[in-house]
Image (tube, rainbow, N blue to C red):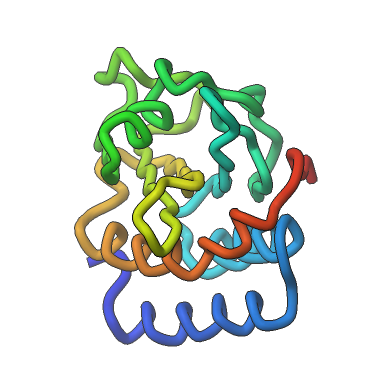
Length: 163
């Protein structure tokens, strides 16, 4: 298990604390920083907003920026998560023809939709890892909860926040 309950609960409380202090893009950026610092398997963490037929990078944390600040919904694993309305987990991105390469060291990816209370997709959390099969069901359960909490911040974010 990569995100056991004993780590998930305090981490979710920290996300709640961030969201209690900050709003919009600032809350998203701080959450990205926290997730990356807290979970070593999260090498790059980004949050995208749904903007028409594209995903727009609202916040991120990693060693360097991605070139994919806008992603059409018909491309990549990020687009697939929105098109299918579900979490996408890829154990080895080198075996996925849909993967939009950002970083040579990326081997795994998990993309979790962020939904409004009515179920409408507002955006997504996109996380890259440097190990094959870096993510499992515990990551998915945890990140679905993070996504639920981020919904108001994603709805309130405007424009890309390129840190």
